[in-house]
Image (cartoon, rainbow, N blue to C red; front, top):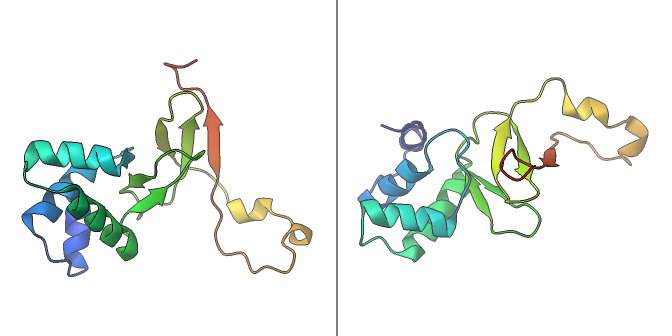
Amino acid sequence: MSDLLERLRGRGWRVTSQRRVVAQVLDGDHVHLTADEVHARAARLLPEISRATVYNTLGEMVSLGEVLEVSTDGRAKRYDPNAHRPHQHLVCSGCGTIRDVGTTGDLLAHLPAEERFGFTVDTAEVTYRGLCPACA
């Protein structure tokens, strides 16, 4: 059973055949698929799955906090199943490939107190950009 599916079951999520297929498609490291890509892959496993079911299932997974919705540079939203692991993203400026990367240190420490403008800052997100080996 996939790690994502186990986490969802642990939250009491009712697992139907459609939901199982969406979770299976998303499972893995460095998976950042669009909803249309999830649908295409899910349809290979379960031909009768509808696009609406895939969108609704992704929305539920995001609402539960088990999948992250990632938007970069106005491209289509992508879905990241590694919501339970602290990480940042490395994005190719050419083809849009996204990779999960671990960072060291406290990202919040890089924001000086005088630049917080009175905000109580509790999280930080960093996106690294560059060209992947194929685009370089």
